[in-house]
Length: 627
Image (cartoon, rainbow, N blue to C red; front, side):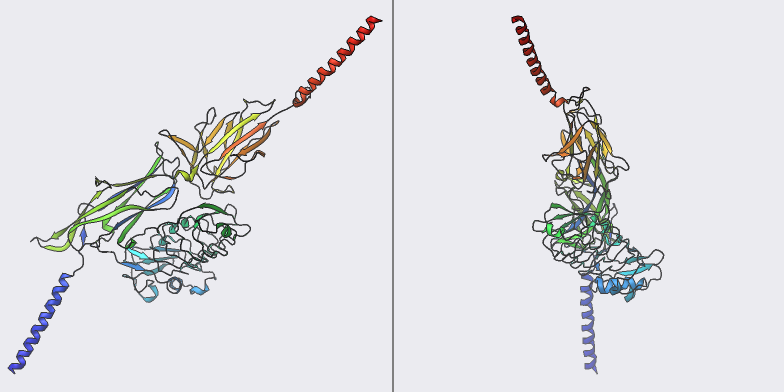
C-alpha cells in the first residue's frame, strides 16, 4: 500500500510539474497588449500640385508601412472565389438564381458596400459567409431589401480579393454601386474573367482606380455587356503588363469613354467589339513598347471611337494597398490614405492647389510585443493621373515610442502607451507631412493663333473674329472635363489679353479678335519668369473664323499644307505645336470694274497705244507740212 501511495505521489508531482512548465511557457509567449495614445494619434498629410492654372482631377495614394517585424502584422480576411462562392451567395441572399443563369434579368442587387457593423440579430451561417478557409477573420454578407444593397462585414482590417474573383458579380444586371470594392486589396488576384459581365446598370468603375493588377493574367469579358458603363478611367492606371488574355474585355459597352493602357502582347480578339459607339464616346488606348496597338485598335467595330494614345513604360510594381500587404518581401503596409482632387478646388495666386487628409495611427491596428522605439514610413505610393506624378523626393519616418503601462505597484500590466515623432529626409522633426510635385509639363500644351492679312484691297487694321473650342473628345463632347476649367488668352495688341477661354462652354464658343500680325496664345501662363502650359494633351481644339465678305480664307496648322475654309476641324492638343495661322486675302475690284490685279498691265497697254497714236499723229502733221 505504501508503495502504491509513493507511485501515486510521484505521478502527481510529475503532472503538477508539467502543468507548471506549460503554464510558464504560456505566460512567456503572450499576445501583444492594448496600445493607448495619450498624447494623440493623428497626423496630417498634405499634397500640393504646382504650376497649374486649373485644379487637377487626380487621386494621390499614401502608404504607412514598416520593415520592423516587431510590429505585429494585422490579421486579414480574403473573399472566396468569385464563381462558386461570392456570386451564388449574394444572388441567393437577394432571392436570385445561381451564377450560370446570369443572362437573365437579375435586378435585385443594386449595390455592394462594406459595413462597419452587423445588423441586430445577425446569425453567422454558411449561406452568409463568403470568406475563404485561410482567412484570419470571416467575411459575412447581409441584404438590405429597402435599397437592394449587399453589405459585407469583417473584423479584419484588410480584406483581400481572392486569386480567382472571376464571375464575382456576373449577371448582377441591377448593380450600379461598387464602392465597397475601393478598399479591397487585389494584390493576390490573377483571374478577373467576366467579373462584372452583364452589369447593365454599372456607369463607372472609379472605385477600382487603386486596384493592384500587377499579377492579373485574365480579363476576358471582364466588363462585357455593361451597356451603361460610360466612365472607364478607373482602369487608366492599371498595370496590364502580365495580362495574357483581354478578349472582349469591353465588348458591348457602347457608352464607354476614358483612357486605358495595354502593355505587353496579350490575346485581344473582340476587345472593342460594339464598344464606344454612342455619340460622344471615345476610348484612348496608351500602349507599351511591344504592344501591337494598331492591330488591337483594328479589332474595333466600324462605329467604335477608339483612338491610339501614347507609348508608356510598364510600371515597376502595382499600386500599394492597405494593411498587411507587402510591396517587398520585408515591408508590411498597415494603411493607405487617398487625397482626391476633383477639379473644383481653388488655385492660388502662385498657381498651386493644396488638399490634406488625416491619418490615425490608433486605427491601424498597430500592436507591439514589448516597449521600444519603432519606425513607420509614410510615402506617396501612387497617382491616378500620370500628368501629376508621384512625389518620390519626400518620405517621412514616424518614430513610435512605446512604453509600459504599469499598475499602482509599478508592475507592467502588459499594455502599452505610445506617442510618435515625425522626421523628414533630413532627420528634422516636423509637425506634419507635406508632399509636393509639379505637374508633368510634357502632358500639357497651348494654342497659338495668328492672323495674316494680304491683298491689294485688304484692310490690315480690320478685326477678324474667331471662336475657339476646347473639348475632351474629338467629337467635341465634354463628358469628363473639369468643371470651370479655363485657359488664359495672351497677346500683344489682342483686345482679349488677360481674358479666358472656357473649356466645354455650354451653348456658345469663346471669341477672340485679331487683326493683321497679331497672335493670341491660349492656355499658357507665366509665373516667376517661367512659362507653363495648361491644356491637357488628352484634349482637342477647334477654331472657326467668322465669315467676312470679299475675303478669301485659308489656314495652316503648324508646318502642314494650307487648307481652304474657316474651320480647322477637331485637332488633338500636343505638347509642342498647335500653331494655327489664318490667312485672309482680298484683291477686290475698284469702282471702274477693272480688276486690280491686271490694272498695271492695262496701263502699260494704254501707254503703248497712246504712244502709237501720238507717233501716227506726228507723222500726219509732218506730211501736211510737206504738202
